Structures are given as C-alpha cells and as structure tokens.
Image 1 (spheres, rainbow, N blue to C red):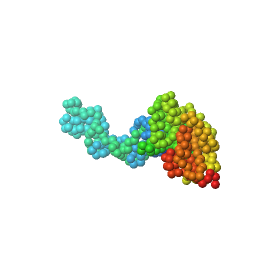
Image 2 (image 1 turned 120 degrees about the horizontal axis):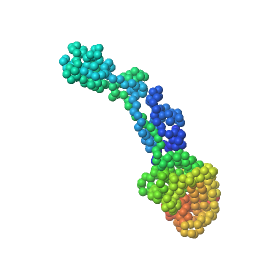
Image 3 (image 1 turned 60 degrees about the horizontal axis):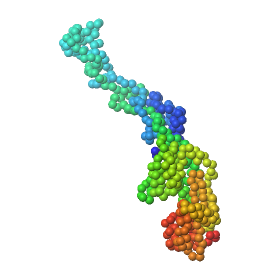
Image 4 (image 1 turned 180 degrees about the vertical axis):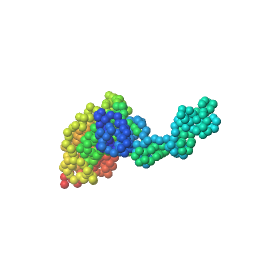
Length: 445
C-alpha cells in the first residue's frame, strides 16, 4: 500500500489511527446535532481531534478511499439547500394548487348527484347527508360509494391519494420541494479486521519513521515509494531508497517492506532482488512482518539481502550509534593527497586501514593499500583503495589486477590512485568497471 503523503507525516491522521489501534477509539459513528455545520458529527473522532466537521469528514473519507478504514452506510440525512440546516419538517400540500389546507379521511361519492367529499362533510348529527343536494344517504354501494382514505384540498377541492411533500426549514423558514432538498449519506468508519492492514499501520506509524530517522542520522537522504529506471529500461518502485554521496563513492540502499499474516515466500525475495539488480543497487534490505520461510531466508542470504524480521526491528532501531557528518557534497571530491583522502573518509564515519588483508571468495588473501569501512548498523560499506606509483602512466594490467582483487572480495566501491596517471587503456577499463580514478603528480604535495 502506497500513499501520496505518509501517514506519520500527517499529525491528525497519525493520532486518530494510533487511538483506533490501541482501542481508545472504536467504530466512528455519526450523531445528529442540528447546531453543527453539516447537521451531524462524529463524537468518537472529536474526543481525539479538534477539527471542523467538514475537515473531519474529508479525513475519514480519504482514509476509507485508501483502504485504511472500512466505510459502512448508516443513515440518509436531508439538508436545507438554502442554509444547509438539518432541522427540517415535512409538510403535505395539494398536488394541484399547492395549498397546505388539506382534509384527510374517507372520501364518499353521492350516487345521486356524484358529489365527492370527505366523510366529515357528510356527517350531520350522526347522519350522512350530501352537502350539495342535502339528500340523506344510508346504504353504501347504493346511495353512496367510498373511495377509501384520501385527501381533499379545502381551497380548490382537488381529491388525491398521495399529497405533494415539501420540507420546511425550521432554521431559515424556506419551503423546498422533495426533489430539491439535499440528501447526504452518513457512514460509520472502523479499522478493517484484516490483520495485514493492522500490521502495516503499526509499521507505518511506529517503526517506519524511526527507520527513516535512523538512516538520516547515518547521512542518507531517504525517498519513500521511490521510482528508479533500470538498465532494462523498466521503471521499478522501492518502498524506500536511501542515498548517500560520499564524494569518492555513492551508496544506495533499496528497502523493501513486506507485511503479511502468512510467511513470506521465495517469490517476493526474488522479485525484490531482481528489481535491485536491474537498477544496479547492491545494498538491499527487506523488512519482513512478521516472518519469512526458511527457503526465502536462504535465498536472501545467498543474494546478500539483509533481512530484518519483526523481532529484530526494535533491536536494530535501538542501536546507539554516533551520528555522522552529513555529506552535502556539492561537487566531486578533489584528490590532493593520500592523507587528505584518509581524513575526508574518517570525517564521514569510515575506519581506514593501511595495507589491509581481505580473504576473497576464492580463499585467497588479497592486500589493499587502503580499505575504508563504515558500519551503519544496518549495512556495511567498504571502499577498496589501490595506489600505483611509477615514472610512466600506469598500464592496464595494474588496474585489472586491482579490480580482480576487489571482485574476489565482493568490494563494489573502488578507488584507484595513479601517480603520475593512467594509460589510455587503463582509463577505459576503469571507466567500464566503475572505478573512481585520481591522477596526481605525487601522493603528497
């Protein structure tokens, strides 16, 4: 579920949903109040939010439209089109002349003169007498017939079974025909019973903002529902994408959030990994609520995806790590000296080792002139630095050997310092292998 505006950034929405998740607020039902702006309000919502009735309605409808709340019809309310008041009273009117002076009762028709009128017109001291010809009528079906209970207009004499209904506003006094009053459907709102929705809400309101803050404190810029175009040309969306430019290396972390009442299967892990691979993103995190199958865990481990399951999440977010200097790199790092590079990396939270030995996948031990390592508590970043000094431009073979060592040690970020510079073939190879190259006249000025 993706939202244009995250729930936890809207203070009112977050407060309401947290109250509903905790049970403080149950089903939100409408209650009539003629003095209110729309004639009714939601007392349960008003207990936790002080917002105008119109805004409260918009908030509830928005959450229902996004599938966060269930919406159910309760009642239809009628509003005055002039003043919007809910305080209306119905009235019956003549279908011919519009008069409200109507008589209701049995309508009798005198067979002799065919006069039709209400029974009360015929009634004279307990006898039925035609008010037109003054002849007494005694036997139904012979002297007179009955049309049943109907209405007769006292002004124009029209007789009819169904009067015209009009609504009189008790606030502004206007009278409105039935087909012109404003009808409004009132609904109740409640949290869905589906457990996956509740899991998602708890993460969205609680752990997600903390995870974003955690990454930001590590110097990352975090985008939610980020769209990235892959090498295939396809556009992929990630729940979160954390980016940090260290000047000498750019790190991207793709974060996938999976919540389900069932254990997460291998297909979801494969789909997430496939998107990240197409986008060239090597650091991958899956947040799984509540858990995943063993074979899915094995695939994630093989594909170097860090999995944070529900029971690990609190421990990770609770890590007390020092905040690092935000990069805010406006232009590429300019190499001036080896010691300057070390200082630059250390300011950005890296530990820098000289002549570091790393064992590769092949089992061989490789030595790097420098190895910069930074543990974010959630991912581990490594930058391999190779240094070659010669009287002539460094040849392709030296760059190839450095890249081969880094590949065997699964180090993706590579920096090569060439003194006095690289040969043309070396530059082409370094560019293809995404090796950052610094050329200098000397290691130290």
